[in-house]
Image 1 (cartoon, helix red, strand yellow):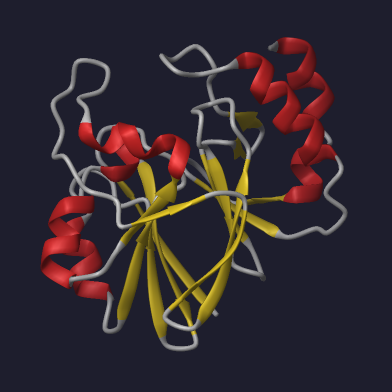
Image 2: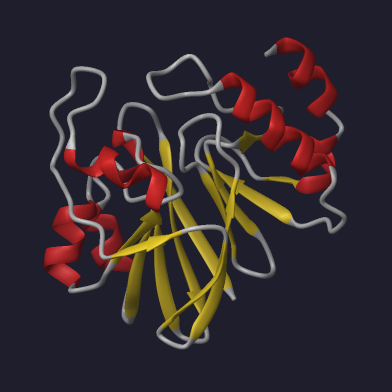
Length: 196
């Protein structure tokens, strides 16, 4: 399995291309991601959104049209794809596969959406088996904000409590900033629980 990334747009949102058995998953194609993605994929099979904020989904529609692949997002965040956010008009996109918690198969490959609401209602981690793409749930030394419209601080607390119980340690590739690991970020959870 291989993962490459590039930060996109004003908010430096990490867009990832994950290659699994020769099949490419595009994770969170943000502002201006289209050309970079097109230059780096040969066998794309899906666009995966960790959540629905504009800086993670901006290039959804353009890439879906150019590549003919489905858009996958947690059902609780699907509404974000059709509405302007934070006063910013964005290209609207239509989700093709709405997921909940659990594994799904795309092009014969299994990936797992882990639902960690709080930053948004449908905020999820995508577990590729060897590593996580965590979107804006957890970062290197930080967590997703809970003061946005549709954020829920109490849901974030429950998500962090769940995160504390994860037994396996895997690399985490977040929506912004540098990679980290599950174990490294679990050390900070109690601080964030007090801070929210």
